[in-house]
View (cartoon, rainbow, N blue to C red):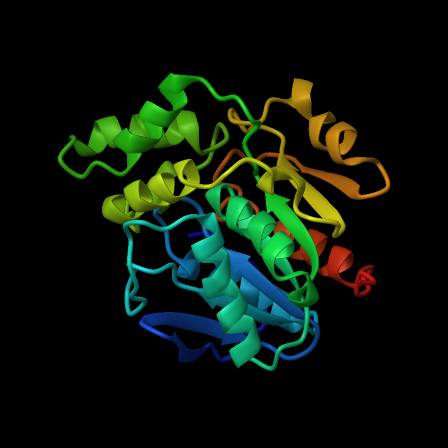
Length: 271
């Protein structure tokens, strides 16, 4: 995982939030306005630690929940929807003081972020969609994601898929050979399929569309799509060079800077 040169180290807190039969483990660091980081499909919140350290240095409090089914986070994985997962995020925010936050979701995590803004608008200042795929992606890309997390495949084959699917040319895809949770990924896909249409809008909150220039899931030809669909008054587009769909391990400093700058522009949305 790429680190940020000269970034100060901030202590990472660990705590757990219980909501009925659900227990969500959380990593946190920093003090200040709040930002929640939600990971990609089948991955954990610890992917964000280098980004979180830089955010903490900029005066931000960062929460990194582990999705249910990963690590010490527990809860049903069957019969759930994106609304269920958004409820987990809301429970974490309420347990951490209840102040509204910017919810940043990486890849699949942006789906959960959008639904959180719809279901719990009082807890959400805005949504950052980080390396968000376009609505219609080629079936072979989804198959390639499956190969990335399939530890029964030869290491070299997985690396080829990781490089082609997640990482920009010249970046070391080995950073993501580990850290996959296939059973959770399958449950998250089922949750997506079980969610009625309408969540794409992210409610009424402002949206940061943080794009990676080499993202095969979001080609540059469609860089304007979300802004056109949700409105230029709501959507701010920032593009990060030399990064693919993984983005977080590739350009953590640029991601932290973009999120920090955007967070400081936000104000609570009137009811």
